Amino acid sequence: MTALPRDELRNLGIAAAILLVAPLPVMGSSYYLGVLIHVVVFAMFAVALNIVFGETDQLFLFMGGLAGIGAYGTALFTNWFGLSAWLTMIAAALFAGLVGLVVSWISARRNFTVVLISILTLNLQLVITEIMVGARDLTGGSTGFTYEEYFSLEAIGGVLGLGPELLIYYISLILLMVILLVYVWLVNARFGVAFDAIREDELAAASIGIDVVRYKVIAGFLAAFVFGLVGPFYAREASYILPSAFTFLTVDVLVLIVLIVGGLRTTLGPIVGAVIVVAIEEILGATLTNWRTAIFGILLIALFLYFRRGVVRFAADRLSTLDGVGSGGESRG
Amino acid sequence: MVTASTMVAIAVDGIAFGVFLALLGVGITLVFGLGEVLNLAIGTFAVMAVLVASWMISSGLGLVVASVIGVVVVAAIGLAADRTLLSPAYRLQGEQRILLGIFTTLGLTVFLDGFLINGINLAFLGGPRLIPAFPASYQLPLDLPTVSVGAAVLRGSSLIVIAVGAVLLAIMFLFLQRTFLGKATRTVFQDEVGAQLVGVEPRRIRTLIFVLSVTVAAVAAIVWALGHQVSVSSGFQFTTFALIVSIVGGVRSLTGAIAAGLLLGLVNQFANFFVGSYVASVILFGAAIVFLLAKPEAIS
Image (cartoon, rainbow over all chains, first blue to last red):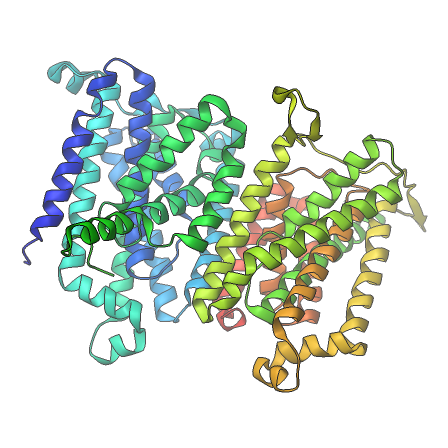
């Protein structure tokens, strides 16, 4: 077991502390609590994309679909087996993970390029969306169904004295920190070395004994599992589940922007990116709701053309030039 | 029991949809073959032509003039997009270029979608409404009679799509086979360094073909919209269909794209008729996935 780097843990601790007290200034406003949950949910999505795309160059463009599998799967398993949603969401996430595993395994075995994976998964996304809309008996079609009832929190909330929204927020925050710790552990363990080698040159990595397929499959499974696991939180936050919430344009495009804004292959990038993107959404929401799509389109283009380094790395470079010493925090990649 | 005449009518509608998809798919194929940029905005460009045309018609112009304006506007925006957005992609090599191409054209799609839904309204500054919003579905007004062939009743709009599409495809083939620019295009397609050695400038050819591809898509969509409703959200849908056509046709093969377009159009129409549109779409996307798994070398 490799010891986790101190500065990474310190940064994570600071981020956790800020997010921990974030609800305090807006205590009692369920609207802002919803916004905060949104930030955490998208940060988690972005960490998952970071693992699979940032670390192993597999561009999954069916993130919305995977989250949908997790969200719908949780509800369906609950209906069918009468178990608590807290149990079935794990099962649904495992199922989503399995889908990611199969996709990664096939792609890695057959040496698919990143472009091929992206088009393959985009088509999977379209299939999943069609099924969510079309299989009305199961999903309620494009009218959906209410989702709140699946996560009963009164029992725990009563004990802790927290409202259900606040409880969901803290549960998702804990989940985010766990996922981030797993990420930090991954990239600092031998996985990280293997990921770097695979990204640089797959053939060379294989020639020094790195099992390329295995590492890509692990990354694919982990990311898909996280998407599946976060899906129910995403649906619960909207309190109503609809196929249109899980389309390519509503989830995948946004998660890509979040990750690139924050910074590919950085630990804090997903959080920073999610805060910025959700803040933009909220500012637009107040005045220019309709322009949201257009502005995210411009953002996507501009980011990929001029700002592929991301805010976190940009800030780290700025700080280190100011200090005159390397900050070391974001040295990877 | 479905009568033979109904089957013929469905087949004709399917061929019409197939020709429409082929025209978009060929555009993706040409641009990707020339410079490895996957144009994920082609459907949006196509829809934009219809929206501009219907805007012109509602402000009093005739159908033909309005359509020409729609096509010209799309060509101009295509040219601007190529010179500004695609240049950075062409400066990169290999996978980096393909990725940047995907993201910039995807971003362009998202932007144009948002833009077209809103239009530009300066009313809050006391100014006029510059560009109208297009929140609904639009169809270009032309009364097309049905045509009876034997017992089969065929939709006039489908026949027009097939006729115009065939002419457009013929023109593109003649251009590529017979003209100097067309030959230069095929040279770049086959061997970029070789093309440069004989004095062909790949970047200019790429611009030319990109503008050509969106122009063809614009014309195709306008003809399509004579018999069908088109909305902003149709754009990305057309793109995904065109992408499938291009992939199944083998991304670098024009005749392949045309054959794939016809095949998918027919499959889609018959599946629509017999099992409903939801299963039809699943079949279509599923077919693309199976094809990608069976022949991945087609696109890499």
